[in-house]
Length: 211
Length: 208
Image (cartoon, rainbow over all chains, first blue to last red; front, side, top):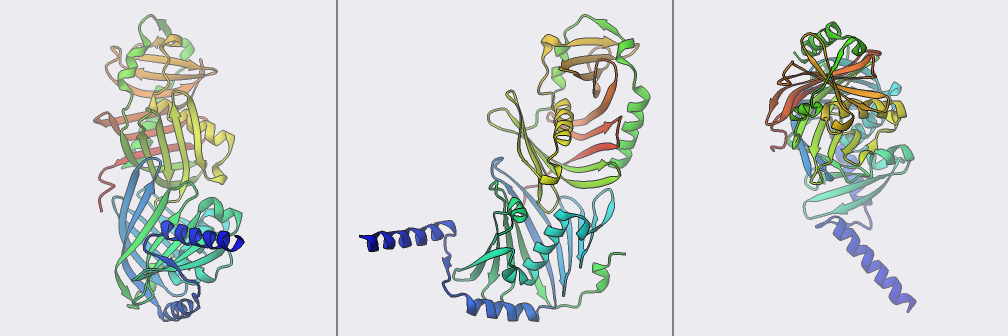
């Protein structure tokens, strides 16, 4: 009887995982994936890409879609240029952040601004793949036919107020992050799809300069 | 451009400020200003906030829900939410506010500022009208707060909105260039501390 209940729970849990992420199954042993992903991340010196960001407000049944250009350069420099439907530039370079909106430009020290510090860290680690080893998250790896999905669930209370979980979709072909999904506790979410990716092209330091 | 608009609006507002007590009360229907109430179905605004020398930008979405309540959700450009408020006949509800903004004074100020602009709580019963040489001030008291809607002499044009008490103004707002009942530009400026909000509508924000 106890065995039957245990089997039923295991089957229900497996079904829940599949219902949560249709087309994906949980990898019981993800060590092979992690090794290959770490090796690919090691080789990635720069990324140049277009991006499409979609903010879904579930209660309002509304979506806000914005587009722009994304640049990453090792170790920790990111430039995001929003071009549609508004102009906004964000550069993260180490612990420094520069933002320019339609009115003003602003330099922020990530250390002096808790929100920016957290966003900075999460964004950088999602792009360079080190989030998988960050002890601020518990990590589960799923796979579909074409993609791996790393589900990062925050452990600390501060991150839990911002994110229910962050999912990184990773191409099986080249182990590049193709999408970042940020799920909020309210049910709202923000996804960033990276398209027209160019890996390891020569990117000028001037793109990431914060003077 | 938006900055210039805000500055000129601020100067205009300051130039026109005056004590309400010196004005004359007149008998007419204060409800006539309800025709100026914006009808937000869904509108997205590029938003800038300047508060005590600090600048913040982001996106504000205003949506009228099926139950007629109005939701305001403000997030930064990268999608991180700052607040999610509901205004309805039943009152005001905070669905979410980022913990560093979660202060009673901040929430109260934002609630009152947006309530003035949304014009969703105009009770004609307690309302009255003041006049000066050129304009009419349609006043709707709510407790110690008084919400004023300044129009021309025939209630044909909404010039600006103000909040204060029965004597003195504490903030002003403008809503301009209406398109299908939705203002293209909204500006909010406080008199007693350095705080202003500028909204410029964004069209075509849901196309892939």
